[in-house]
Image 1: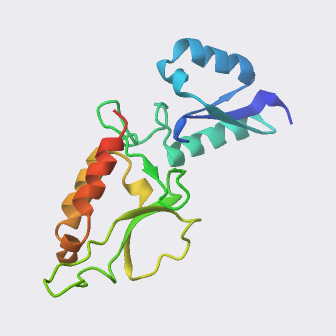
Image 2: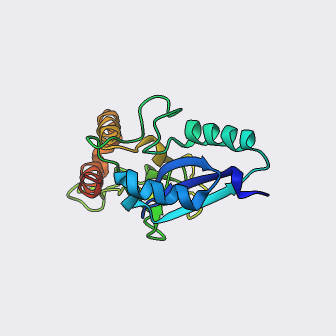
Amino acid sequence: MSTNNTLYRFFDNVDRLLYVGISGNPGRRFNEHGKEKGWSQEVVRSTMQHFSTREEAAAAEVAAILTERPLHNVTHNQGKPLATPRTPRVRFVCDICQTPIVGASGYVQVDIRTAGRYEDDDNDFDIVKWQTLHRACDPNVSSSHYWWATDRLTTTDDLIRFEDHMVEKSWVEWTDLDEFVEGLMHRAER
């Protein structure tokens, strides 16, 4: 297949999708982005996908922008972007493998089966910890866990709405929700 119909994606160091585009000369286009776009310094990885026709590449570009919502594409990027410079992005790291969680590849969860169990006669209870996990590291989320997909919590604004929703749950007092959210806020990109 010809490189004249190439769909490319740029990613940053936490595998966040920065930009999607098509080009007949990917090498030249990469250099142009480097000179024209301030965000180009964030690019650490790119992928390329070749198509038989320009029309196929263009259709794939639109589909990728609509579904993957890259941070710096404007055309076809419907609705609010995943983050703006004024809305810091939340960064998740899997508690098991210690690698970044990107998009819908993970979730935040708490095991509510153990919430509220008392550990001694003074009625002190164990605090249940919220976790972030890749689906691949823990593919069998049981129904006794309460979980949210990480792609629903992409910005600090989303995280605040999540915390507001969670405090309505009677069992949340037995979890470390405040510390969990505070940690994510602290790690959020500024």
